[in-house]
Structure formats: C-alpha cells, structure tokens
Length: 92
Image 1 (tube, rainbow, N blue to C red):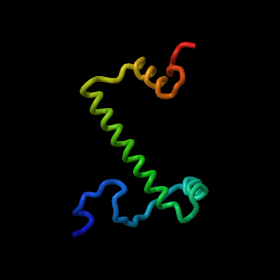
Image 2: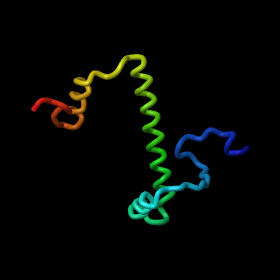
Image 3: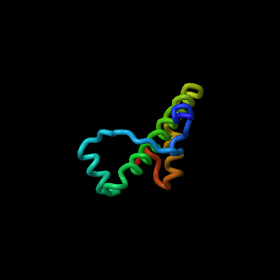
Image 4: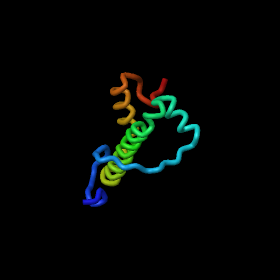
C-alpha cells in the first residue's frame, strides 16, 4: 500500500524526503541552533507547531462564528490570571 493511501497524523512515521528552499539567513539561523545534522528534525518540529497553530486558529474561528468574539475585558482578566501580571490594557 502506498503512503498516499494512508492518513498519517503529524509526527507519525514513516518519513519522506522532500526538497525545501529557505532563505540563506533562515538556514544559517537554524544551523547555528542545531548544527548541520539537526536541520530536518528542527523543521519537522516547526512544521508540527505550525499545524497545531493552524488547527487552533480554525477552532477559534469556528467558536467565534457560533458564540461571537471573546469579550476583551474577560480576555485581559484571564491573561492576567495566567501570567500573574496586570491585565493587558489595564489602566495604570
């Protein structure tokens, strides 16, 4: 059975090779962090994080369509509670 016939979740094996084009500066920054041999693993993790963010954005959009946008004051209060700081946009 070809890999194209099976649905894999992000991060599931097997691996597949592709060609990726990056700007020189981006590639240099990645190599400075992980070395030459760590680039593929770094890009895999970055792609997985982006997929997670895209999925969350879709969930938030769907939620907003059903329930309307979040109350900015409630959001600021929750942010302050989570971070232990003052509310974002709070009067000083």
